[in-house]
Amino acid sequence: MKRLPIIVMLLTVFLAGPIFFNSCAGKTESETLSGDSLTNELKELYDAEALLKKADKLFKEKDFAGAIQEYRRFLELHPLHKSAAHSQYRIGLSYFKQIRSIDRDIEPVQKALSAFETVLKDYSMSEFVKDAGDKIKVCREKLAEREFYVGNFYLKKEDYLAAVERFRIILTEYPDSAVSEKAFYHLGIAYNSNGKIEMAVEVLQGLLTRYPDSRYKEDASELLARLNGHQGL
Image 1: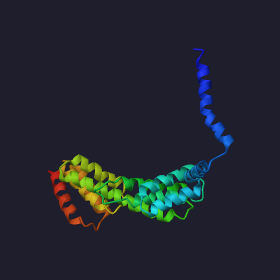
Image 2 (image 1 turned 135 degrees about the vertical axis):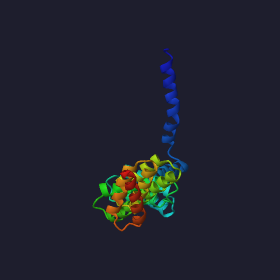
Image 3 (image 1 turned 120 degrees about the vertical axis):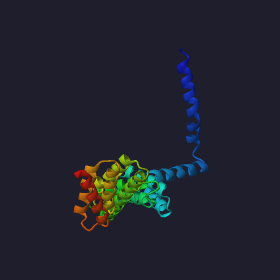
Image 4 (image 1 turned 120 degrees about the horizontal axis):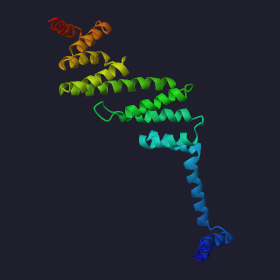
């Protein structure tokens, strides 16, 4: 057991030897170049302008995953930098540009929405607020459309409980979306098909009240008349 410190000391001397002799002999040209390369690499990893330049380059090349990673690194290292708002906005824009049709992966929409909401929350005085707000509206419309797409799928499959859940999400979370009107009507259909007559009546009446000139007015009115007649029996 007493031999262990001696072994450790010898190992330390052995490892330190090359460093000591190299420092005495002076750096070779290759070592100098290696040191310069390391300095450049560290600058690229941590320097604000270098990071931003790399991120912008990746964004321009449409490498959005890479751009997101570099913009996030920039924000982690330089949260108070003058270009922080630019970086946060570009994160949202990178996700936004990956959005496809609503029957595809919806994750880019969700992440774009979150990133743009951060712009409004943390950089409310920046030049990116208006465009971020506009894109938030687009993202919310996409999410509402997605809910309707899934809800209508369940309705056709006669899974009425699942359909009801999706249509109700639209009316509670995206009441001002373009699909809100048809979500009202299809929710009434789903309730009726599931035997929830009172709920169907309430929803269809809500549709006609909120959208008096609805394109579903005739169909909704006919269904309401039948349901009210059924309730009167």
